[in-house]
Image (cartoon, rainbow, N blue to C red; front, side, top):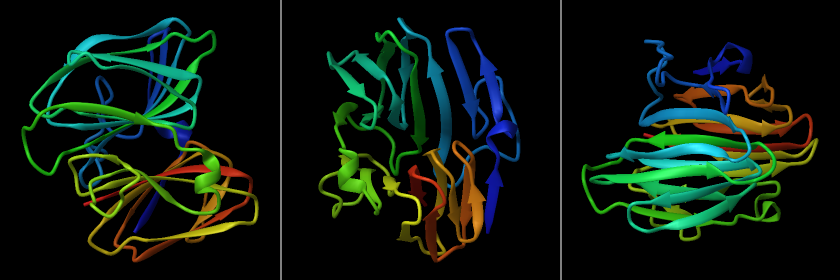
Amino acid sequence: MIELRPFDRLGAADHGWLKAKHHFSFARYFDPERMGHGSLRVWNDDEIAPNTGFPPHPHAEMEIITYVRQGAITHEDSLGNEGRTEAGDVQVMSAGSGIRHAEFNREDVPTKIFQIWIEPASKGGEPHWGAKPFPKGERSGQFVALASGFDGDTDALPIRASARVLGATLRVGETAEYRLGTARHAYLVPATGLVEVNGIKVQARDGLAIENEKALTIRALEDAEIVLVDAP
């Protein structure tokens, strides 16, 4: 089963400093048909105005992955971590038993991110944070694990979930495949470009909810940058 969720039909919020689109129910946007997809709970498409951001606030029992599409995000947390993650790179915060953090756009341009929340495989544990650059050349024409709970994904940022967040960049005419398996849930969003997934056209920032599919074949109809979550 594959369901296309067009960008212009997603939930929306405009706080002035923050413009957000919600692929799933979040904050004041509630849709009982879109409470998550497997263990994927949140996928927010956020645009943060320059020199603004999220003040300190708590999280627990969630794996929070931030994929930066434009600009940069600066992270601070109650463990003393601080770091700046630039466009094309990824940060992961395992909230574990509890952590407070803040996220700021300290740039002179709007910062655009995908923020992805995945439910952990088990409760508790020490919280941690990490970030890593992922040069787009390394994921040219293929999917690369950016964050993963699987031992074999040694180059990915670790998460406490039986899930992967993957990225790929495809030039027009290129094709990438991903073996999924019928017991898994996938959610795919092109950050840029136009692609065709198992025969369905997906435009930039549309969502594609997938389950009971053994494999995905993604063909780029334009140069494209793709983010994919594979979750139980």
